Length: 566
Image (tube, rainbow, N blue to C red; front, side):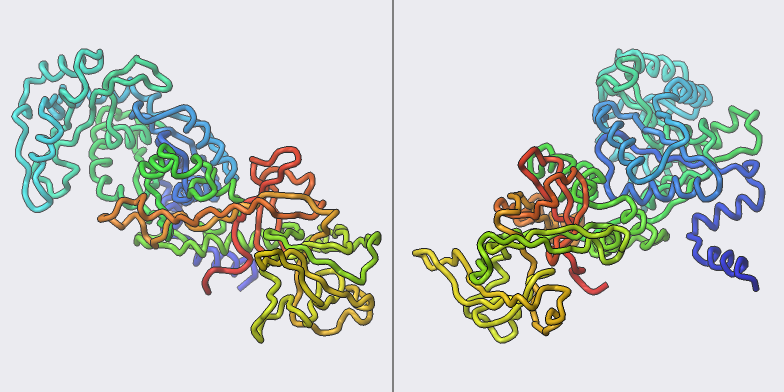
C-alpha cells in the first residue's frame, strides 16, 4: 500500500460519526452533492466553551467537505436578545478562526413562518388556545400517561385565524392565548402533544422593532429556517434528539406546500454536549453571575465564555485542539477541565516568550558584588523555538527573588535559598546565603548572599552542581506590576448537578487572588494587551486589557504543570 493510501486509510479511521454520515451522503449523491451547515446561536448571551465545540463541528464539516456554513441568529425571543450579543458572537467565531458564508436571522423568515402557521390553521392542524401555561402543562400528561385535549382543540378554523391575526396586531395581551399545533395528545413523545408554536411578546425586537407582536417558538422556527436556507446537515447537541421527530414533522408539512423543491430535505443530527468539571454552562446562570456582580462581566477570566477565556490567555488554537481531542460521540460525559488546561499549556509552551517575574518579592543583596556594576545576562526567549532568539536581563547587586524561595530554618529537602546553602540564579551566578535582616515583628526584609564570580552561566565552572535554581529580577532594572492569579470558579466538580444547593453558594472564594507588588523585568515595559508569556517557574500569563501606561496587569492562564496526571 502506498504512503498516500496509508494516509487516506488513517483519515478514514479518524472520522467522527457525523463525518461518516456526511461522506455516505456525498457518496449517495444526496442533495446533489451539496454540503451546507449552519451555526444557529440565540443572541441572548455570550458564547461559552460549549459553543466552541458546536462551532468547530458546524464550520469544520463545511471546510472539510467543500461546503458552506452560515451564521444564523435564532432571534425569536426579543425580551432576552440584544445587539451586544450579536456583535460578541461574530467576534468570537472569527477569533476561533472561522468565517461564515452568510449571516441570516430567524427574523428574516417571520413572514414565511407566519404564512406557514396560517396554512396549518386552514388545514385544521393548528388552533388558538386560551388556557394558561399551567393548564396547558397539566393537560399534557406524563411520559406514561396520555394527555387530555384542550377545550379549544376543535375551535372553528375561521375563529383561530381571526384570533391569530389579533395576536400579530398586538390586540392580545401576553399570556392570554397561544397558537398550538394539533398533532397527537397521546403520543409517547411529549413534544408531539400539541406543542405551542406561537406566543405573544410585547417587547421591541432588536431588528424588527414593533412590527411583530406574536413570535414563533424555537421548535417551529428552527427547522423551517434550515429548510428555507437550504441546510443539508442540521447538527446540534443531544438534548435536541427528542425534538427531531417534531423537526421532521414540520419539515414534512412545509415540503408538502413546496413541491417545487423536489428531493431536497434537511436532516438533523445530534452529538454530545461539552460539559467541563468545575464549570457552569447554563447561560441563564452565567447571566445571573454577571448581573449580580459575582464576576466582573462576561469577559471575567474565570468565566467559561470565549471572551473570558480569551482575556485569561487561552488561544484559539488551544481550544480547537482541545475540542478535536475530546471528539464527538452520542454519549454525554463530564470532561476534566485539566484537559483544556493541558491544551493551552502545550500551545503556549511552543509559542510563549520566557521572561522573569517575581510575584511576591523580597530583596536579595549580593554583598560581594560591586555596587555600581551592571551585567547583561542573555536569556533565551523560548528553548522550544530557536528562531525566537534571546534578550538581555540586567544583573545588579540588589535583586528581587520570590519570598517563598527562601526559608531560614529549612527542612532537609528544601533545595532553594537557605543560610549556608548554594543555589543558582538563573542565567547568572551561584550564590550562597550569608544572613538576613528582619523588621521588629520578625519579618524578613532583606536576604544577604555572596556570589562566586567563576560560576557565571557559560563559564567553565558554571557546571558546578547545585540542587536549586531561582529566578530573579534586578531592583533598579525592574518594573512594578499587578498579577492576577485565577483558579476554578466553583468548588465542586459538577456544579450544574447540585440541585439542592443554590449554585452561588458553590462559588470559590479564592478563585481570584491579586498580587499588587510584583516586579517584572524591563523587557515587558511595552507588552501589549493579550500578549502571552511564560513567567519562569510560575506559569503562563498574558497581559490584561486593564493595563495602562505605567501600570502593567497580568493574568495567569495556567500554572506550568498539569494539576493532575492526564
